[in-house]
Amino acid sequence: MAGAALRPIEALAPADLLYAPDGQPYRAGRIITRRYQGEMVALTTGGDALWVTPATQVLVRWRPRHPRAVCDWGGSPLASLTRRQELRRDANRAERTLWGRLRGTQMGTKFRRQHPIGPFIADFYSRAAHLVVELDGDTHSTTEAQAHDAARTLYMESQGLLVLRFANHQVLTDLDAVSAGIFDACRDRIAGQESVEWVAARDLAAGDTVLAGWPLGAAELRAVAVERADGLVCRSAASGISLATQHGCLRAPQSEAR
Image (spheres, rainbow, N blue to C red):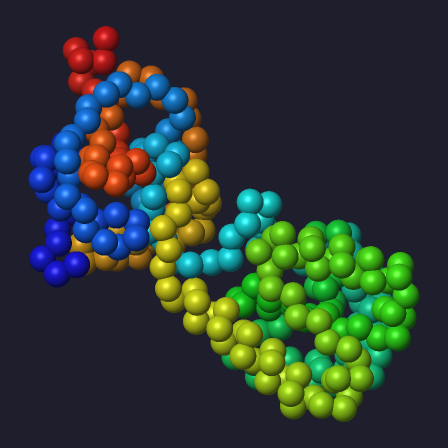
């Protein structure tokens, strides 16, 4: 993107080169101005909010995303405290052995043991890596237990978490291989968060890190709000491949909005 610069959308003209969400430049064939009625998304990092349409693509730092992901599960609710304390106290040999490798930051990230994830309690959880480690013993071999484990895994994955499952005997007979697998997964998950992705404004949430300005600078979204808007003038830059998501909306002057 050498030589690129930010310009207000009202200053765009046909034949301008625009960068699309795929990072490639496309030439604007025409500039379309139309009235817009519908939902608008307000993105606030500090100061005035930036208003965009829900389909507008915003450049953000990568993080695990899923339509049902609603929490980073970093909290420790009191409702399950007693049960979690019991599970820690009654941990089997494999769980105690693996915890010896996971505790602290030996994996490059901090782990918690017997941590609540929605209706379930994960054996081990890393908030930074968005990763869960589960250990399966002999009691997990029954049909009922396997169905329960599958439901646990499905739910956790639906929250954007990576779930690693190991049998107890793997931990007890090949701890180094198990530890290496967990370490590699944590490294890849955390390294991935240094990359960026294009995300529709409708899918953003407070806490996301957006990149804006030129050169690009990072800022954390403090708030994301959705409101119904009427009386706006919308300008779209259309190219030969129809950059439908590359648009922005400007509030119309009072005389024009009537």
